[in-house]
Length: 404
Image (spheres, rainbow, N blue to C red):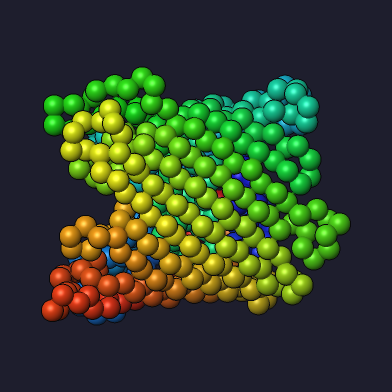
């Protein structure tokens, strides 16, 4: 498996388990094809929400009622790849398949066959042209270029996803171009069919009498830049500041959803920071998603939506096998939640994970999470006398992942 640069940066900063990247780099299974590697993981969990249960769980990514209060298979991940070598005209590929409930986020209903427990998460050809330090391309289907967290749960510092991750794009079909200017600055730019996920998805309007209406000019534009502190900066070296934008038409989603038939923009700023305390690393992120009315969209399908999400991260390596990860976050807007009457709402959340590597190649972690909001989001109308009551949701989870 070829771990993406941002995941590697998180690992070097201590914000995700080093065992993840070590496993990915040191134990590929060589196939009959030269330089081709096979890797992946089996992700399982046990989740418990104290209380009587909740038909409307907090709206962070991959959280739904079917995963609460029971045992879960989250995903089976299979990656077949050939990384590019150091040659001037290098080439390679990546195929990443996802099986299980988490695959639904990459195979939504608009692909034509309905939501499925099987998805092609990534499938691209990587190419290098001898321009300057080397110009790298990805052509095909790939993960979004923005975000602090990634789509593969085991590679994140926490078991559950953040609200920030939940408003970001997940997948695009198109082409990206990346360039490493020097040890400090790198950049990526690209173009994709649409902002929403789905293999070969198009920016088509949908709605009553308009399903399949094409907008040939609707494309999605991608851009990002990363700054990495050099070794000369002492304990601060390796710290990374990252900024990116994805702008395009969020077409092809289910009619009536908050982001259908919209021009949508996603902005992201985030970073990881090493500290004078070698075992302690910090991180922070800000995400904004906005969907504005499109004058050419069908009538009644173009209201405005937005969501802000802020998160702070901390990681402390207690021993070689044990680490603790914390995340605090706040989100406000009307994409994830709306109060009665359509007003934007807000939510606070705090998450703590303890990782411990007891078995070889196995990641085990326990998580405690608390979410608090107002209104009727977590189940039932909680407005009394016109005033919104505070609502709390608690989650305890155990995650066990085998990485191969």
